[in-house]
Image (tube, rainbow, N blue to C red; front, top):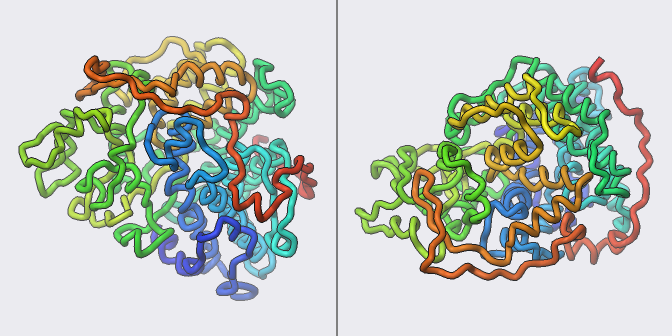
Length: 560
């Protein structure tokens, strides 16, 4: 990761101030032409691991993945608008996320264009391009998943000359993302060039996710029949093969202790296939774009986040807490702080953090039982204060948050095997699902259904920004089922509840449920509006999508 951090100087002068900045190509003239070599190729791609993703990670990652799926509730619009489907083109976290994803796209495009124009070694140049295409493909997967129709761009220059551009259809955006990731899987190196950098198995892992979701979309005739009820077997097979590539490589395994996944000292551990690479130890307020500042939105206690914390309003929903099995205390403890919990690695100088202990008169007990906070706080991603670890600073958790873990690949394999069946007793699929459950201290399954996998994904990856995408992958071919699921969550009336460690969830008869205004829940809920200022600058965003013309042959020999 050291090279990634040092290389950030190349474009750290870039600004994310305007959402439409993605239309303007940024200077990469520091390294170009004959000066580009094996010694500095990695410098061009380094910002694609952090700086370009900053605004996406700052709030939107959790807003889309967890608030929108009703894992998380919050009173502010940057999370709350997603929790209650009241988002609009003016929601504060919407525009920055769109801009960030296109910043990734255009930064990757500039890397690809620059690398192609040089006389560097062909193998090294191709690997550099593959690294950029990994990032661009992931950005387009998010765009296809959340906005559906989007602008496909391989060169920012035409957009600068003419910013009035039609969007391309979701079908093409999805295929573009898949093609990019397939290129990455073919041409990235077997092993990471440096700690934290992606390799071909990172791309295969992402493809297991992409193919699995795309299988339902293809079967629906690309959205024409969203209740078709089955998935495309060809893409299910590809999802299985992609997962097998990762599993068979022997490079990854489940970390033994679930809690340890989210410790700073375990950044880039053996379970991580891809993680953002943030700069540790620096102040996030004075170094914008370089740190994992999302902790400030999540942490409810200053001692748990280097002083800047407004996450006391970031709480799990009753629906979320009801999902936990009674014995699933390991994953609950790792994800949500509750009264009675003790965290020895937070506030170490004061003997650790114990929720429910008011012996120091700091009001911490009230966090476990008060009418505002619904008795739990976010733990996952919350790492402590400066005294606990030198990597921590203001608006900087020091955590390189994983965007793809080996556990997901195992569950992707199992779901691909399940395919269109109601359940499966496939021995290998059961082995992988039960390995994930065993780490959580849970008994194994004798058979698995989609509902089993939905449950497992929701708990395993809670507060990692994934659950909404799991629901949408189902909605591509069973849309009404997912709409009914969202309606049944009854977001407009949140029960008053209490929770004590380890797993004592109960309704609070002394309080009334909290009423919330909830937007319409129908097929239009399943995608986001374009940001308001983007519509102003590009009125063609409202026009019907125009098919994209692919000029490159798709890779077909990944699994030969």
